[in-house]
Structures are given as C-alpha cells and as structure tokens.
Length: 254
Length: 340
Image 1 (cartoon, chains in turn yellow, red):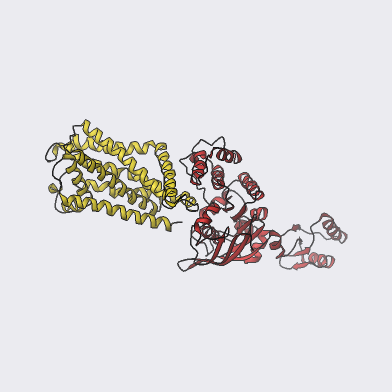
Image 2 (cartoon, one colour):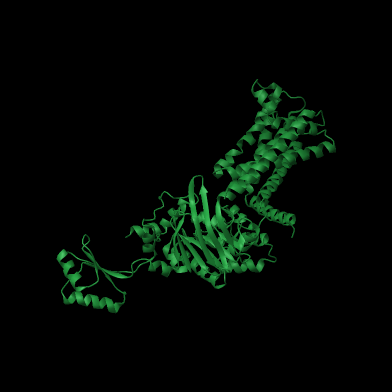
C-alpha cells in the first residue's frame, strides 16, 4: 500500500470515528444548529426593525448568520480534540503505524461537515423567513466555496487550540473569540453606523470582509475586490496558521 | 545478544536542565518479561515513551525488535503494542467499536472473529455494545489491553498496568500477562509494586532517580542483601546477654535489645532454636522470621525510602497514579518501606 493511500485510509477510519461521536452526541449538533437559528429569529424579528440597512433586514442578516453558524460549532471540536490528547488516545495512535495527520484530519473534516449542515439549516430557515437571493448560480457556487474554505480554515485553527489547551474547559473557552468576533463585525449592522474605535475594529477584523463578500454574492449585488481579497487572505491565513500550529503541537505533546 | 527484543545503551533524556534518564542500559530477551521497578518520578514512563517512539532520546541507542527507534520508527511501530498509564480508549465508542477501529487501522479484514475473540478473552462480551464511558476502571484497562493486542504485536509495553486496580482485577491482569508470555510475546512492564515484579518478571531493573541501580532476576537481587533470619526481642539486657551466649552467630542490637540469628526458616530449625531458648529458660518478647523481599532490596540498593515527593519526580510520572494506587490498599514501594 502506498503512503498516500494508507494515509487516506487512516483518515477515513478517523473520520468514521468522529462521525460516530457526532451521532452519539446529538445535543452538540442540535445546539450548533439551534443557536444560530435563535439568533436569527431575535435579530430579524426583535432588533432588526431598529437597524437601518438597505433592503430587507433578513437579507442583510443571513450572510452574518451563516458565518456565526460556522464559528459557533467550533467549541465542541476544541473540547473533543483536547479530550483526545489528554486521555491518551492520541498517544495510542502515535505509537502505531498510523498516518500522523489522520486523527487531526478526521476532526477537521467532521467539523466542516457539521458546519455545512448548520449553514444549510440557517439558509433554509432564512428562506422561510423571507430571505431572497438575487445571486446567480455562479455566485452561489462561489458562496458555497467561501463557506467551505472558512469552515475548513477555522477548523484547523480550532484543532490547534484544542491540542494546545491544558484542559477541556480552556479548550472550549479558546474558541469564544471566534464566536464573538462576528458580533463586532458588519454581521448585524453596517460598520459605518458604529462608533469610532469599534468601527475601525469592525472594518479591519477578519469577519467583516468575509461577511461582505458573502453578502455581495448572495444578493447578486456589488462585490468589492478588496473585500474578496481580504476574505480569501484571512481564510488562507487561518488555515495555514492552524495547520502549522496543530501539527507542531501534535508532534511535541507526548 | 542477537535475539534481544529490546536493547538500550546509554539512554539519556533531560527536560531543560533536569536529568530524567541518566545513561541507562539494559537488554530484554525475546519472549521474556522485563520489569522496570521504581517509585514515581524515577523515569519509568519517560523510558517507555522513548522506547515506544513517543519521545526522542537526547543520547544513546535504543533498538526495539531489531530496529533503531530514531531511524526506523515505522518498523518499530508495526512491531509493538503499548498500553499507557491511563486507559486510552475512545469513550464515545463501544468496546466492540474500539476494537474494530484498531483492526481497521491495522488493515485486518475481516475483523469480526478477532474482535469477538478478544471480547470473550477479556470477559467483555456482555458489555461489548455499551459505550466505553460506562465501563468501570478495571473494564477500561482490560479493553485498553485488548486493543493493544489487536494484530498480535511481538513486543508489548505495559506502563503501570495495574496501578489503581482492585486486587481481583490485578490478578486477572497478571494472568493475561502470563498467557501472552506463554504465546511468545515479549513484555516490558513498569511497576511500582514489588510483588508484581517478583510475580511476573524474568528480569528486573531497579530504576532510581534516572539510573538503574541494579538489575537481575528477582532471586539475584534478593541475594544482594542479608538472608533469612530470626529476630528475637528481649525485655532486659540480661536476657539478651544470656540469649547471645546460647545462640552462637547472632548479631546483637543493644539499643533495640534484639538478636538477629541466621536461619534457613524451616520449621525444624525454628523448633530447635526455640527448644534451646526453653532449655535455658530464656523468654523473648517478640519472635519473627524475616525473609528478604524486594522491599529490602530496594532499600538496600538505594539507601533511601522511595517517596514520590523525592526531588527527582519527573513531570511525566503522574502523581495521580500514586494517589489512586494508595486507595487500593496495595503495597507500593513507599508504604511497604515505611512499614519497617
């Protein structure tokens, strides 16, 4: 068996393991889907009326909620990666002739799949609440691509945080910034309406360009090239940072 | 040694400026049980970690199954099975699924028969389809060991396999180790229980503060210290005097008012000794027969009681293990030495 096919086989076995975990822990999935939906109901029906945005508020909010659905599901991944390294199961795999990255890849792919499910749920409920997209098929394909890239990138970052954390609690806590950042972005209100200071923060933080790009794609409206470039750069940066950090921590911690 | 399953020379490992392993060397013959005995912090787990490719040594050569652990890591990994100090099972999978996963990773197909065989052997058939998170500590250890056995590794490392187990589970574990050896498997076992090393090991290395202070068979180690003797304690110095006159060859301890007389420990020689005391109307307050055990060996070799608060306690030898060990009421190095 060649190196790569055995690595692929190992990753598939690990992925099956992570899917079993997900199925055994339906509360996690339910929570990851439910929380963004509750946020959507709150923002659209409660606060949304007070915000000044162009077009209908649900159209404005869906892209931000998509991003939130991705980041909100990261907490359980950090906790479960941390559990793996603290309970010794990773050491078991490390003393076996098993592809080094398989256990991490398993977590990343499982997390990405869970994120896609949560995003699909948000879009579905969004449609039911009156969300309408004017994006072309190509726009949608690009939006799905960006969602996958963001989920993949933040998953690697989360895996790294889970490996580095001293305890399950601190692993879960490490992902809080990723969950909070969308609130301080243009997810729910345009950055231009924010107070000085917060506004600058919102404009330069990673999620604003990502959300603006998604918004442009889904509305079929204008997409700023600078936002698109920034969005892609942030995602690739997260993925690289997460990957390098995760792999080096994985090697170090015995 | 040509057929050595494990050969270690000059192994050194430091964490920062703290020396955890200070140039240790030993060989383990194929198909034998080798036990590394020492208190917490002696460097046992670090040794296991280096031998099982989890850690890199700072110096020295380590060959496992004939392969160099630094250069031929892949081959070493295919030859070994490792059961660490804490049960490394997937708690969100059932016992059967855990074993199945191991079989998948080792590309054993079909695995059904192997898995159900192992479940039966470890008396886990009833709990096979329950999640491992519902298992008791003993069951987890058994599942852990069963997972290690998937694929029949030639060399098995057991890092304190019975720490924290109740006496019954400990016996079961010992039985399994004996069966494995009978099948030709080589076992490297670390323990802080002298009795365990005595019971299972063909050869024992005593590790203290990162050095091997002695190695040999249990018999050889016991020979390094005073033999079986009878200890008599008296109420007065006068009685001690007369006893010392009657029992030639005894060693007196004036402070303790005791006399140590060499003896082979048989009932015939003991009766003869008591008869002689009777003839001279000498009464001893206490009478005990002392056979050397590995406790004595450890104390004689290291010259100190092995407490885990010793300065050499390494971060990798967990204190938690000692806590759980104490709660089982079993004899650890520490408490058995303090008894004396």
